[in-house]
Image (cartoon, rainbow, N blue to C red; front, side, top):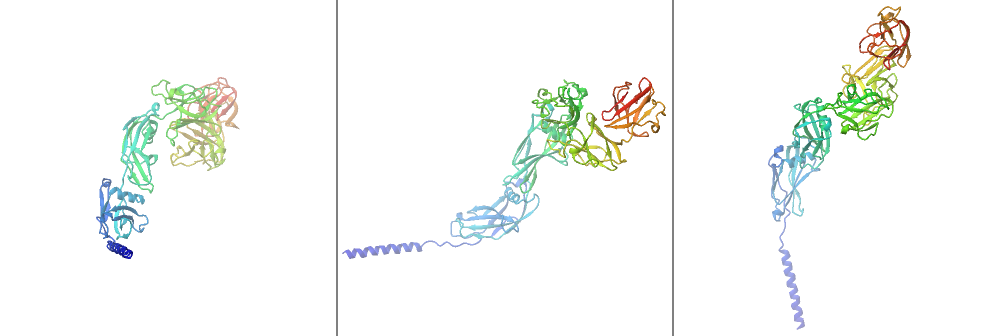
Amino acid sequence: MKNIKKYLSLAAILVLIVSACTKVADLPYYDKGQPVTLTASKTAVTATPADSVTPVIAFNWTDPNYKQDSLLYKFMLEIDSTGRNFTKKSIKIVTGAQTTSLTGRELNNILLNYGFALGTPYDLDIRVTSSYGNNNESYLSNVVKVRVTPYNDPSVLTTTASTVVCSIATQTQQANVFNWSKSFSGYSGNVTYTIQYDSAGKNFASIKQIVIGDNLYTKPLLQKELNETGLNCNIAGGAVGKVDYRIKAVTAQGAISYSNTVSITITTYAMKLYLVGGSSPAGWTPAAATPLMPDTRFPGTFFTYAYLNSGGGGIKFLTENTDWNTPTQTIFGDANGSGTSGTITSAGGGNNINVAADGVYRITVDLSNSKYFLQTGGIGAVGLVGAFQGWSPSTAIKMSNFAPNRFLQITNMTTNDEFKFHDGDAWDNSANNLSRWYDVNASNAIIINGTGAGNNFKWAGATGPVRAIFDYGDVNNPQWSLTPATEMRVVGDGIQGVPDWNPGASPQMTYAGNGVWTLTLTLVAGKDIKFLAGNDWGAFDYEDNSGGSTATGTPRKIKWEGGNNFKTPTTTGSYTISLNEYTQTVTIN
C-alpha cells in the first residue's frame, strides 16, 4: 500500500513538470524589428518670428515592426549640422508615434545653440533612432538633409515714459524705466543685453550705448542719466529733442538681435558750471564766476584751472553766473564737509568746499557721479611734455598760471621739436586721475585727448627760447600760441631820444629769467608805449589792461589780445620798467 502511494506522488510531480514545460513553450516570440525610413515634409525652412509656435516642418517614419504594443515604441529624432556625424546632436524623443514636427522657435534655438548667424542658411542632417521602450534593438534610420535659416527672435522693448523734462535740481530722480522681453526665448545659453541709442530718425547711424549685462530685462534711468543720452545726441542744454532707443541682444555664440525702437522726447538741462567762493578768483560774486570747461570724454564732467587760497572760506559751484536767487540757479556744495575730494550735492546748496592750502588747482566736478576733486601740486597745473624735456608727465615743465585757465611759459626748444600740453602726473585718464593732454587737430584747434584725431604741437621756428601759451580763458574758444622769446622791445612816442614807433630802432629789454624783462630809460610824460617781442610789427606784443593807469611803483595788468597803449608817467624822467610775463603785469619805477 505504501508503495502504491509513493508511485502516485511521483506521477503527479511528473505531470506538473510536463505542464510547466508546455507553458514555457507557449510564450510569444519577439522579433528584432527593422530600421525605419525617415521622410521630411520640406527640404528647406526659412521661418520668421510669426512661426515661433507654429510647426514649420514635419517628420514621418515607417513602422519598425517590433513585436510589442506600438504605443511603447521609442523614437529619437536626432539633428546635427551636416558633416559632423551627429557628434553634437540635438534630440527630440517621441514615444508611440511615427511622426513629429518642430516649431519655428524649436528649430531656431537648435541653430542658435550651434552658434549659427541669423539670416544665413545652414544644412542639417536628421535621422531617427528607433528601439523598444526599454532601448533594446536600437536601429538607425536613413539621413535626410534640410536647409534651415535661423531668424531674429528679438526682445520687445517698452518705456514707462515717452516725454521727460530733466533738470539739475531733480537729476537724481527716476526719469523712466526700460523693460524688455527675453530675446531668443528657449535658447539655453546666456544672452547679453545692451541699450543702444541715437538721435531720432537717424537709424542708429552713430550708436551710443549703455551696457546692461547677462539675462537682465529692466533698466531704470535717473534724470541725469537720461539727460546725458540727450546731450550725447546733440540736444543742446535747455532744448527739446527726441532720442531713439533699442535693445541689442547677443547670444553666447555671437548671434545678434535688435528689438523694436522706442522714442523719448527729452528736455535737457544746460550743462554749465561756474566756480565761486571766497577762496576763488571770483569771490562770492556770481557775475564774476569762473566758468568750468566740459570734459567731452566724460558726460557730466567739468573742470577748470584756478588759483585758490585757503583763507577765503571755501568754494561752491553754480549753474548760472547770475543772481543767487535766479529761479534756474542750482548751487552745489560738499555733501559732508570732507574737503579736497568728496561728494557734491545740491541739497540745500551743500556745505562750502574747503581749500586746504594756497595754490594752483585742477578743479574737477563729475555731476554724473556726484563727485568733485581739488588737485594741486604736480597735478594742478598745465605742463609741457615733449622732445625738449622728455615725455614723462612726472617731469613736465609746469607752466605759470596768471589767470583761471591761462598759462604761459618761456622755455628753450629746438627746430621741429614736438610736444603736448598736459596736466596730471601720468598718462592716465581714468575716473580717479582724469589726466588730460591736449593735441592740435587739422583745423589748428586745441582738443582734449580722445575727442578727435589730433597731432602733437610742433615748434617750426629757430632754436632758442619760445613763448608757449595755453589759453582756455574762453571755454568755448580755447587758444594756444608759440612765438619766439629771444627779445622784448619798448616802442612808442614816449621814449626820449628814440624814433617814434620804430621797432627796429627801439631799445631792447634784458631777460632776467622767470618771465621777467627789465630796462632803464627816460620816458616822456603824457605819451604812449607798448611792448613788442621782435624788431618789426607783426611780432607778439603786449597792450595795456589797466584802464590807462599812469601810476608808478604799482603793477599794471597787461594783455596780448589787442587794446590800448600804456600811458607814460605824468612826469618826464628816468624809469626802470619791469615786465613780468608770468604774472602778466608791468611795473614802472
